[in-house]
Image (cartoon, rainbow, N blue to C red; front, side, top):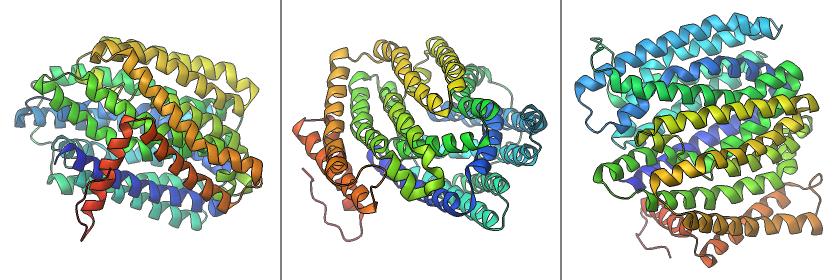
Length: 489
């Protein structure tokens, strides 16, 4: 499967999974799950995943990035995955009681235990899914992600309707991991880590050590806000923050996250050929910023009507949080693959130093912001995003060999496209209804006209993403039954 076909399947996976997860979140939030219950689940999930994110231990990246993956190396990787990931899952289960005690909330205990138990299923999915990615079989990857999302939605909605509250979300997470394991095993062929093999572990442990530092730091950065808010402010505030952060992250992944898994093996092929990495990386930056920046800025500007129309009036306090969190995503996509490419190219020490600095900065900003309220916590995410760009930009330039001029040119083009996309929304606020009164018609028309202005500006600005968007649209059109291949210009 070539890169563009893989990207199409990745997009199919991301859009289908997003649709399922998004529809589920709307149904649950409007009728069954309130901020307090979501906050309870979010605290338990954040606390458990601080430990459980270590499960991968770099096995996925080892399998997808190894130059010569022999059956012996694969067996060793599978053994390490099961032993290490299984141990982490048991540790997560043991952590459930201390978490409930720390927050002085006995309701956290069963929720945390169910979430922790779900990670017992993860080891048998890691290696099969990594093999699918290595061979660029993103059709199988799409099936894995869509089926796991459907399992989560079915279980969570069924139990929520029966009044299980936060436990419904926990059992949904368990069902998601179970489905991922079953489908991954099916698509890769039933794979069991037997016989166990522990020879040749050095390269995996080298990569795993770096991956573990990244997992710890990334987990702290991602989950610390909910944990701090839960401790200092309360469950309802956690629920509001989680709703805003979850929506912003889902929409960002919808636009950019789908193809990240495609680019890693694709860059491995470029590396193995000995070709320069700078030019393809700038094309990736152009695709990420040219598409994601306008969308995130649009969400920030439309935050209040989006929250009101999707989730209802009891969630309106999440709107200003969504504005700041969506703007922070602009920074996080400015330097894509900032973790994957240094690992692929063996820049472990540089990467670890930046992980630690990024994580420490996040914690310090949270400690300074939390006493002033949850809105300040959301604002701190944007400050952290700016620092993130400063931390990684120099390393990426030195490692990949692109020019500052080339990167800045792309940023300016993407910023121009972003401003163009915002014009209809800003005009409608002045000529139609203000954000607190905007209805569905205004929201949809703003988005539609904004998309049109964005596409026109991409072409006028000669943005590199325009050709990619046009080519991808043509590829999708040609894939439809009965379609006649024709170039899109």
